Amino acid sequence: MKPIRITHVITGLSIGGAEKVLLRLLREMDTNGFENNVISLTDMGALSESMIATGTIVSAMNFLKGNVNVMPVAHLGAELRSQKPDLVQTWMYHADLIGGIAARLTTSAPVLWNLRQSTLDETHSKKSTIRTAMACARLSSSLPSAIVCGSHSACRVHTELGYDAANMVVLNNGFDTNVYSHSPEQRAAFRAKLGITEDTILIGNPSRYDPQKDHRMFLQAAARVAQKVPNAHFVLCGDSITSENQELSSIIKEQGLSERVHILGTLKDINPFYSAIDILVLSSAYGEGAPNVIGEAMSAEVPCVATDVGDSAYLIDDTGLIVPARNAHALADAVVSLSQDSCDTRKAKGQAARLRIKHHFPLTTMVRRYEDLYRRVYSQRYDF
Image (cartoon, rainbow, N blue to C red; front, side):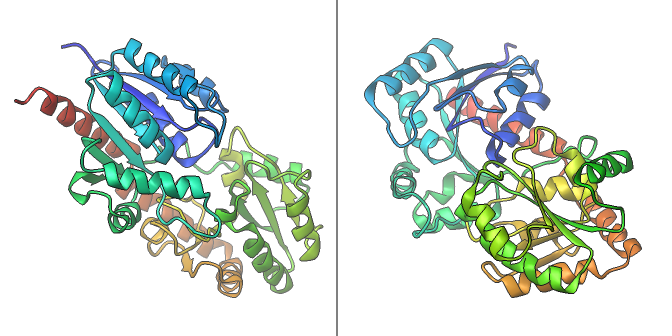
């Protein structure tokens, strides 16, 4: 039997949660049963090389963000037509809408959508994103054959927005604990580069600079932690987490943290980061689905503190701490609590976190569930 041809249409290929999940699928799916291609609506992005290395054909439509016009859309339709996919899997709102409509107009392939985030924030989310999500809601019972939700919170929130609940299926993120694991050697090397010693409590926040991630609140909490934990340092990485980011630099200085905060930009290999830190913090204000960084850190035996957004509490369970969003006092108290644990206690919590990922969120389960869904939708195409 010939493999099922799947074309994935995604907004972009920068380092983000949806992009990481897609890359894991490309690496792990059964190559005898499936053949994958990827189309980025924007540019090739940081993860394109890794995707190409899996043997996947990757192309970019070069849409300008915020400026969809006829020529790129026509190019997308032509590309879809030429690939002759058996299924089209779109990822995130704009790809769901634009890619879904283009697939319907140019191919006979069933379309699957993929919802990655939970709440939209009317203050900070782009109006175009909100409009696109609402347009998708109106089409959700007629355009896609299935709607993948990357988290239970995404399923619940989008049902409330008017998406067709009957079309939805929750497929939890999965993590490869062979890839994400603790390395004493990487820990020592990473800390040496930062110029800190083993007895420093290193608190990490790996998030792109975006209102959703609420770095201002994180740094306000960090200032409180610094007062109570004299040996605490903070390390941040992600897109736009650089010294050139004047707003970020200003907040760090305003909070009196210039000597305590290390900003590293985007890391191609985040494993040494996880090995080096003692506590991971995700301070998101809204929008998270099932955050990859939490699952990755837990796999590497790092206890986590996160705001109660999306499925963070479901992932962490009793291996770390959950606090209300937008509450610097609560976040600081939780980080101080973990910081004041003994090394053995934190280590035990980290080991429990890794076991939770191995037992409940293994990569093999995620891949198998995607494959099962693709086979089901493909078979229904010919079930008259």
